[in-house]
Image (cartoon, rainbow, N blue to C red; front, side, top):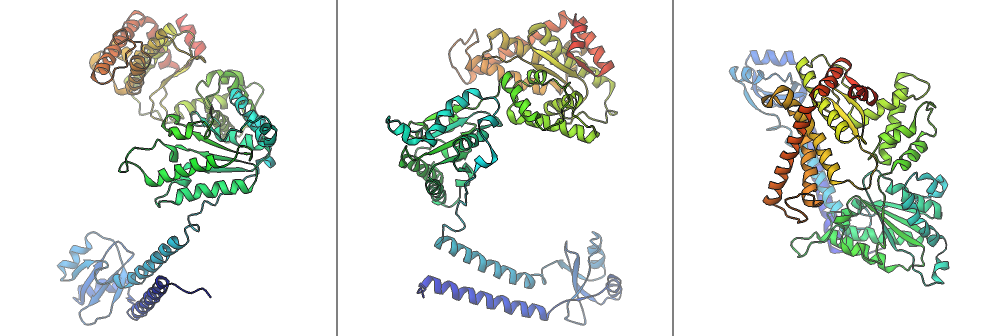
Length: 570
């Protein structure tokens, strides 16, 4: 039998003493159990002056004592705010519930909680690998038939990782040429673009176990726990032979380390150091590859990104037009979608949609069809889902909206549509409406730009003018004193755009290519926004007759599509 240490003996004795105290208090407490009486009897005793003290609180019952007895009584608590005053006027002492009862009943639980706390603390110190273990298990993704065929779009990314699959399958093949398999890859890009799916597809194509963890799994308040979990993860991967380790949201542990002992996070730094050490420790012929995913590549520590750690940085970007159509086709499989639904047209409308957003769009369309009891999913359900994802559901009750507010909204959204059609004819104004949505918008003008790699200076200026045209229309039609708060989101977007225009893209004539910041840059941004707003107002004044047509049509129909808008402006 293993000999107990002195600390263990003392801990056992303390636990025994605490348990004896708990049992003793419980026994004493049982002897002083309160007698329950109806509230009517209690009220009668109060009227007769027999009640000495009452404890009132938020509990369902309240305790009281009589002048003639030391026994404890309980009755129902009516929770009447005026009860305290009535009792005081009757000469009854009133105390808060638990002042003379409750402590005795709570003491056993306090002592018992203390016993468990100290026991858990001792267990944590003596067996850190128990409750603090990572408990990650491998997933056999080959059984679920996940491979590159499951990843729609992202053709370039698949090309960049296809050789890694062959590396994992045949590491000796490349070892003969002195080639080293990439120890790690970073997948970066916006949320919902399929970084996790790509990692699973690599494991599925290679037919190896897939170990998936999150960066937050390694972040703990106890120093050393995260590093231990990293070592455990890599140990399990080595035991599996060939494997893919996937660490999602790696920026939780891989952010740039701060200089100086006072400014750093010791636990996070130790975890990151353990990860770097493990990645440098295994051989390139082992058939193990580490894949990490992040939305913020710029925040990662340089030591993670150097060759020999995460050798490749693969962008999993938002899908282009062809990619969006293939993603929609993939998610349409298995859904009873009518042949009349034009997925190619929908792909053109969903600029800047991620793969997850496209999947959600078709799922919303399926829900709409199920709610309406239709056998198939039609274009109406898809369109409704599209605008729900963009701006929220339409408000059903619009009776409280005043005619003046509808008129202001019509001219505001009409200003956006007018400026877009005149300045950016290559853009698509898919829908313009004055129906308020559940997301708080009074209406919206859906302006869809084409897929482009670059934007010119003139295009950025036109984009800013289109955003400002809603406020400009309000001022031109209703006067400067009657502009509304409806342009708040437009103003935020314009200021962010102009800030990039001036400081990031170097397109300001006054500042040029200099990367100035502070008051100088702020002043130039203010001047630029004001100049663009004057252009928007002048545009509205010149074409007010067209603006009136759009506003009148919106007040009549509430919603216009692009064909109807083109007819008005023809």
